[in-house]
Length: 378
Image (cartoon, one colour):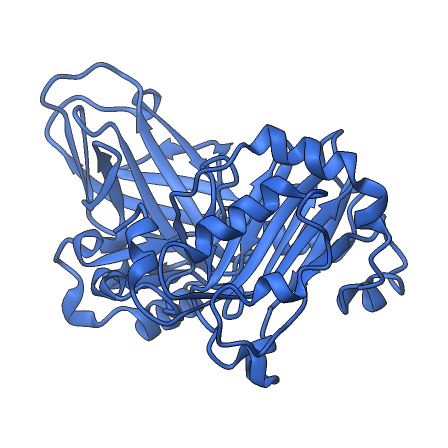
């Protein structure tokens, strides 16, 4: 059993019933003794998120957290990663107030690991400032998935042995940036119509002889589900022509008019070279094992496709799907197209819904900054 001690100061009447606590969204019991919140619980290894919520209505309430101690080890300066939200934006605070009635404290188990992890990513002199003004900090959440999935997927979704931090100045040059995990992109397409187009041509898509390399490993797993499938619609090409994909698209325009229109929209933005287009298909209750798309390191065609350069377009993903980047967390699939650093971050996903889902993946080379105009997060 682990123990967390949270010493505090509070000038008003306050007891244990005034707050509720959770770790990784799971409620935990607590008690208060001598101005210390005490939690006895089994704490998972790696990154955890403790949330303290004020549930009593108390005007001008202020609870000042003085320290965070896990198994007799203080979190020291990393306590100042604690945050609340105002207008959906994080800001550093160690005060729980009636205005900001939720405070979240990131911490790690063991604490020695957490202090080392933070030291690699945050300069000591930055603590005490509003870190969330300077950085985008990604704290991956722990997700418990169906025990019917292979152990590799259960562990990948549940355990987080790190977090990711990006200085906001990095977003000034986002294309091919290796530090930015993903960005939302403004593309015009009809998701329902594309789903119908792919479903209508399902036999053609499934006839593709390309198989992801990881399927060789997946097929050896003792606990295995259906393997995921890929149709490699545009094969790697060395053409410098930004519309060179038309020479290697294996399907006719009349078969996939909406896909064709989407690719034209992308290359019409600026000097964009499309190198690969794939249509991924994951059946109900199946998965994509964790992997990294690091082809650019090994073949000439991919030399200029590292970092934030792969378009990821979910098509009819239903509730029960999860897509995760290691150290970053769950990637949203309900906000439209994304531009991701799939070559830099290990990623994997599951489909625990009752419907097959499709994904369009497009590996690009951006010769200029024109495509930045399509990015929503800048």
